[in-house]
Length: 153
Image 1 (cartoon, rainbow, N blue to C red):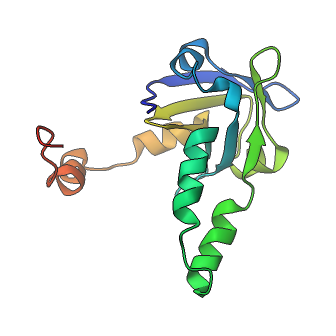
Image 2: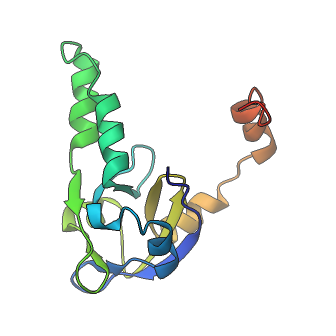
């Protein structure tokens, strides 16, 4: 099970390629050879990089939805739209599709944010704006985590 950590400043070159930071690659050394799926984030103007195995597990769950329910089909269509298989090239770079980089408003400076089993990919400006949003983290933590007993779980 992956438990990825860290924030990383990266650069996109003119061809839309980005080096995977060595510290992040080291955390994923057992799965790098499998490749990744890049997709739009559902909640923000960002992209999500899923290691192949994580994408397979997520897809298996999503594919349990009843395809005869219109909302389910709409969700499946929107969720899978744009999902793209990407792999590291010989220099350790990921080539990002132009349509997805446009969706996330990516420029030269980008930010990677590793969260457990996936990696968010943000424009530096959008990432900084997200971090500066006025959110009461104490209240949010209590609402989200208040019923979780970390000793038992």
